[in-house]
Length: 298
Image (cartoon, rainbow, N blue to C red; front, side):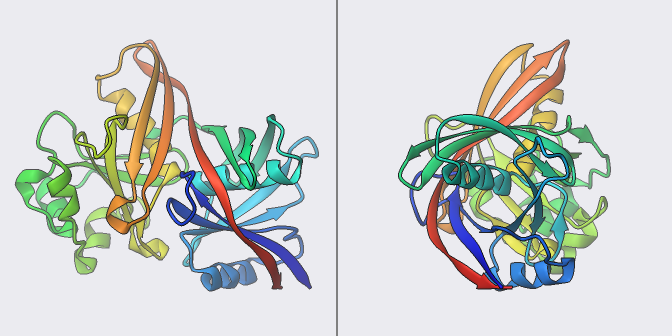
């Protein structure tokens, strides 16, 4: 049968930048292997399948696939789908819930013009440190950077998860992060201790004055050598940053620029609420724009 689909660029307000996303609408009746085949066909970082929700009060249920596997939760699919569904519903500002395997994800979305919008989602779970932090020298070899440029100051290498685990690797600056050339023969051995390896490499030096951090994310076992914008990683980053001791109680807005080295500049906005020295809640926000629409026989 013909099923509608759309592609969006997410965490950007400019077409052909940000992180591309495919959304297959009216996906009920598709089985898991066929969803994976369709995700490989689109061959984007993620493809979302929109299904009828189990809870009728939710807007939709989502299943999210990379070209290689299914994910329980992902950020740019959540933002992109929230924007797309809100545009379908008329574009007015509204709140709704999207069901993902990680749990219900509260969202708010509004139109910002023709075929574009802005969305925010609350983290479905508080990030946790899942351990398994590898040695600096091993991480440096896996990323193809000098060991002296890895974890150079008061930020450690740690693995955190808000649904998917990411190893957070601080580096000295933009020159160091630009030099990353991952060694596929080492990457999984060093960074795959908590499942398929995913490295979120970041520095405090940024390209834009309004950004807090510059980042790159590598996850070859997911079929994603490098991702232009990784909302699930920034969700876990909230736990990492809150535990660093650099943020006082209260509200903090953290802007993460990503994707520049790929020619896909993206901007992710993290809002953290700290209480009693711990992360109480957090949300991720970003823009998205519809790039194409069509049908797929599936």
